[in-house]
Image (cartoon, rainbow, N blue to C red; front, top):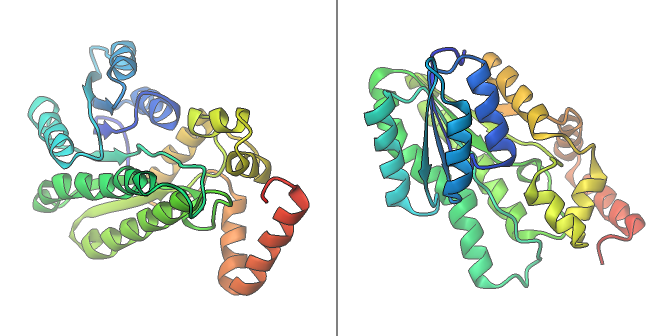
Amino acid sequence: MQLRDAVVVITGAGSGIGAAMARRFAAEGAAALLLADIDEASVTALADELATDSCRALARRVDVGDREQVEEMVAAAVSELGPIDLLCSNAGIGAGAGLDAPDEDWDRLWRINVMAHVHAARAALPAMVERGSGYLLQTASAAGLLTTPGDAPYTATKHAAVGLAEWIAVTYGGRGVKVSALCPQAVNTPLLQGPAEEGNASALAVRGASAVLEPEDVADAVVRGLADERFLILPHAEVADHVAFKVADRDRWIAAIRRALAGSGTIA
């Protein structure tokens, strides 16, 4: 997929990877951007920054865990900007807890990390299928391919997000719809750095497991992945090696992770 002249919707666009993608897509020549986030002030400022004569940019406050708000977002994008070429379902949250995370946290992560992708796909797919073209980029995580020690809700919901993206690719790929799952490891965003600075064991483990990329690095990887129309977009190249190790011998991989955690001192 080429981004020039594309109409793009991005959720979670107020900061981090979402904001970096918005800036990069505008630089690539996107014709229009609808930027959505629960933080309306942040996306409004970003839309004002990116709006030009050649790139329309609209801001919208959206709780992606709310089906009606996501449907209204998609309808507004089509009405005001035109048919959606690329929908980046990017918003996500972590819990930083194990099985003892409160039920409310499990429910909240399920809504934001999984159902938000469902709502977006349900809203956007019919028109994409009808015209025989369109692209869904779903931000998951390397946690959805591997694991995040210390965060059971995050690991479980990100696995579900990757599985959903794969199902959509299998089901709709023959009807003109492309799908990519973005699966970075450590990225310098509030989702990682805030908890890490507070000493959260899960965030410290993630930050110590790989290089911490900047959101702009991830946006670069996204542009390359979209151009190649790759299902898995892996900004951290080593994730592919970890996945291959895991698939080849899952028992050995689990044992290796246990040993690594025992040596790190970051996970009890």
